[in-house]
Image (cartoon, rainbow, N blue to C red; front, side, top):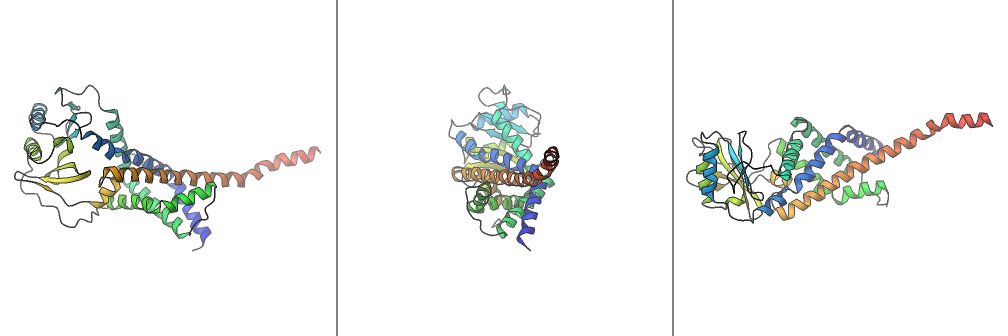
Length: 307
């Protein structure tokens, strides 16, 4: 396949998916800092298990909640699967207002995973991104120059491992590929009640490190920070067991090490945004350059006729 044809494919796939890619990249940039924000809040005062259990029983006496989320930074707790607002852990009352940053992260995650409510659009756009990057790779090494095209090509090649790994791991997540070395334990009987799960987790981990506790796949599962890594644990009446690592998700979300992976994801998002914007600018400049003589033709003819 000739280089001009590869370039044409590279350009048109970018144009077709420009808007969804822009939305995915910008929301990915926002989500890149979420691990840093979460880990910055876990070093505060301890959260007492008795207090959390008391509030769960108060606001969910019938046990209908599917789980809970804890925001250690704002000291708020949210019962999942209910219409209740966030609960202030200090006062025990409904929080006066939700955390603006938490709401931004929530919006960004929904948009990033279900653009316009359509998960297939995210998957298709991510696949398009991989194809665009591979086409650029096949076209060969760039000549680095201080031009728009030079910056476009230089950014792609110098950040290639990061910008290629990000959409690839996104596709692995979309297709359920986890690369886990051992299977997750099978669910045994009914999942543990939420207050009992809180009590079990508090026996071995600090609750301020917990991000969520919820039922998943018929089992109670907790996600919490352990040594800077966001680990998943199975919670039963007898033990709290770490689940096999889902490496595509850890890498894509930057949760394998908040202090290292989160800044890398920021760099990746900025690089992808730079590639998309410079690519569109290059196309726009070339298109306008081709059309300019046609636009000036009648005017030039008028000048000649007047002379």
